[in-house]
Amino acid sequence: MIKNAYLNRVYEELALRNAHEPEYLQAVKEVLESIQPLVEKHPEYEKADLIERLVEPERIITFRVPWVDDSGNVHVNRGYRVQFNSAIGPYKGGLRFHPSVNQSILKFLGFEQVFKNSLTTLPMGGGKGGSDFDPKGKSDMEVMRFCQSFMTELYRHIGQFVDCPAGDIGVGAREVGYMFGQYRRLTNSYQGGMMTGKGLTYGGSLARKQATGYGLCYFTAEALKCMRNDSFAGKKVVISGSGNVAIYAAEKAAQLGGTVITMSDSAGYVYDPNGIDLDYVKDLKEVRRGRISEYTTSHPDATYVADCRKVWETPCDIALPCATQNEIDAESAKALVKGGCTVVCEGANMPSTAEAISVYLENGILYGPAKASNAGGVATSGLEMSQNSERLSWTFEEVDSKLQEIMKGIFHASYDASVEAGSTGNLMVGANCAGFLKVATAMMEQGICY
Ligand code: NDP
Ligand code: 2IT
View 1 (cartoon, rainbow, N blue to C red):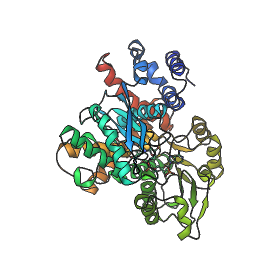
View 2 (cartoon, rainbow, N blue to C red):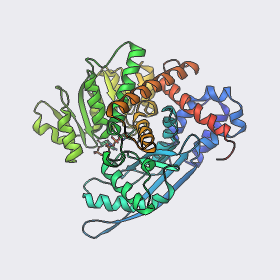
View 3 (cartoon, rainbow, N blue to C red):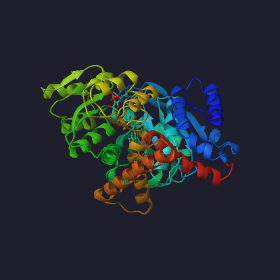
C-alpha cells in the first residue's frame, strides 16, 4: 500500500492517465511502495516533482516496420523504443521481439531497467524496445529482412553515447548481428558500444551469453550464504523457460551443486528426475530452435506436461523463474510453498505478480527480485561497452570474475538498503531503494532538465 500522500497522489494520477497499461502500473506501484521511507527523508524530492518526472519516460518512439516474407508477401509490424531515463548514462536495455509486445510491457521493462542499471554501479541509463514481430517459424532471411527494416528507422535514435540496445526475448546473437550490420551500413561508422550481445568476432564480450543466468545464480548463492548460511549443494531447482537466461541459470545451478529438474517453454514443461540434460537442451533451443516437448523422445525418465503454468507444482527447494512477466500468480506461489520451496530468485523481468510476492513474504521465502537478481546480463553488457571503448577484449575468467563481484555487490547493496529502510531482509524493498537513490541524486543534481 502507498501510505505516503505525495507518492499516493502521483500514483493515482498515473493510474488514471495510463489505465490501459497494467504491467507498467504494476512495476511503478511496487517501486513507489518500497521507496516511501526515502521520500519521507527527502522532502526536496516533492518540491522538485522528482517522482512525477521519474515515472514518465523521457521519450517514446513508435514506428512502422514493413518487411517482405519469403513468398513475397508484405507484412507490417510495430516497432518501439522507450527511452526512460538517462540521468546516469546513455539509455541501455534490450529489444524484445514477441507478439505480446505493446507499450505497457515496454514501459514496465524500461522503468525496471532504470533501477536495475543503477544497481550494477555502471554508468547506464534505462531503456527498452522491441516489436510485436514473432520470430517463431520465420526463416533466417525473413528475420534478417525484419531486423534490417527495424534498424532502418531505429538507427537515427540510438548510438554509443545516446542509447545502446541489446537482446531480450526473441532477440539473440542472430538478431543483434543483423541489426548491428544494418546500423554500421546506415551510419558508415563502427560504434562497438552502440549495441551489446554482439558476436565474438566483432566486439562481443566473452561471458555475455552466460551472464544473466550465471549472475542470477551468483546472486542467489550469495543470498543463501549470507541470509541462510546455505548453498545450492544438494538442492532441487525448478527453472521455467528454456531460452538464454534459463539455459545458463541451469548450467550454473548445476555447477554449484544443485539438480535442475524442470525447464519449460510457452507450450509446456518437462520434468526430469535425473536432472535436465543441458547439452540436449542447448542443441534443441540454440541450434535447432525446437520445442521442449521433444525432450521426452530421447529421455525416457522425463515427463512432459502441456501447461507451462503447472511447472510451479513441482516440489523443489529453489525456484528460478526465467521465462516472462507474471508467470507466477498467487496460486502458483502457494503451490511452490506447498512443494517445499524456500527460495525464489527471478531471472525473468517481473515474473511474479504482486499477489505472488505477498505469498513469498508471508511464508518466509528468500525472495530475490528481478531488478537485482537478473542484473548480470546488463552488467556484462556494460563490461562489453568498456572493452569496446578501450579496444581490448578480456578473457572469460576476467569478465566472469567481475560479474561475480558485481552480483555479490548488488546483493549486499540491496540487503543493506533493506536494513536502512526498516525492512531487514526484504530484498525487494532494498533493491528498489538502492537503485532509486542513485538515480534520484543524479536527477536532483542536474536540475529540472528532464
Ligand atoms: P529467450 O527468447 O531466449 O527465451 C524466452 C523463454 O521464455 C522461452 O523458453 C519462451 O518460450 C519462454 N516464454 C516467452 N514468453 C512466454 C510466455 N508468454 N509464456 C510462457 N513462456 C514464455 O529470452 P531470454 O531468455 O533472453 O529472456 C527470458 C526472460 O529474462 C525475459 O523476462 C527477459 O526480459 C529476461 N531477461 C533477459 C536478459 C538477457 O540478457 N537476455 C537479461 C535480464 C532479464 P517460447 O519459446 O515457447 O516462446
Ligand atoms: O532485461 C535486461 O536486463 C536485458 N534484457 C539485458 C539488457 C542489456 O542491455 O544487456
